[in-house]
Amino acid sequence: MISYLGLGSNLETPIEQLRDARLAIAKISGIEEIAFSSLYRSPPMDSRVQPDYINAVMAIETDLSPLKLLAVMQNVENEQGRVRKERWGARTLDIDILLFGDEILNFPELCVPHYGMTERAFVLYPLAEIAPNLTIPKYGKLTDLVNRCPLDGLERLSDVI
Ligand code: ROI
Image (cartoon, rainbow, N blue to C red; front, side, top):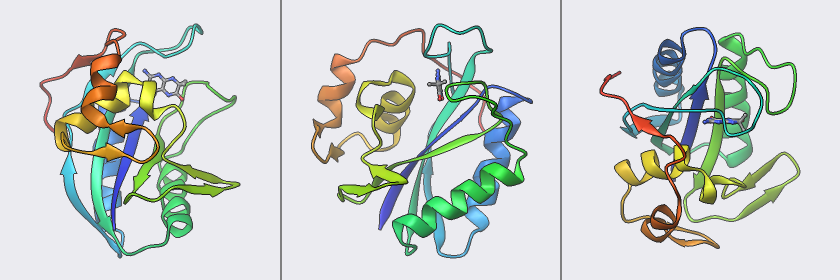
């Protein structure tokens, strides 16, 4: 199954957090990297004062189940010393399962497509970079979502990781 992961960090040298996460994810058995977007910088999506985020999207091929995939991603977050005191607060590393093939999943701990992804520039733009022809279950064509989504300060970085 092809799955898309959203990665974000705004603490403890975010670019390194994303680089380390990419390497850790690619090493997991049952997961192969297919693509990794550019890095993007954006202001935090809520009004609270916290550092800018670095975000990216990674495409993987996996034979893990969705809940197993969630568990291994939470493990990567924890291994990288995730610090998060509050919901919506600053964090060292956040990994979201955005899509799992074209499946619609509603487990208590995992909803796919990821809620909110269809309105977030820091998800849609990197996703469109690596999968421009995607159709999102329930929401339609990715290009249409991108066209409707303001940049909100999103900036593509030239750093390659
Ligand atoms: N804002 C941006 N720009 N990027 C994120 O990854 C991000 N993640 C979050 C909240 C706090 C909602 N804001 C964000 O969880």
